[in-house]
Length: 106
Image (tube, rainbow, N blue to C red; front, side):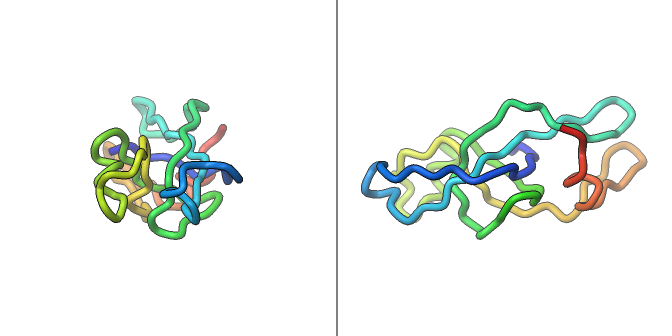
């Protein structure tokens, strides 16, 4: 699983019929330095939203076969899926709450 922040929406008016109605979001995976500070990687990923998240949310992201399992029938051509909304992360001796993670510098 990957921690990331939702930074935008992806609009694809033409896509595979089985993805019609699916919400696609742009997610920036987070990185953590040795001091326990969070920052953005700027390696953006398009992910299907399974939870109704939106811009600024810190999320758990899965990729590959795990993402396909997040689809209703487990067979959708999905490479990345949002499977959780993060409240806080304990890193070293710090607890990073949602507001601090969401505000991590890009």
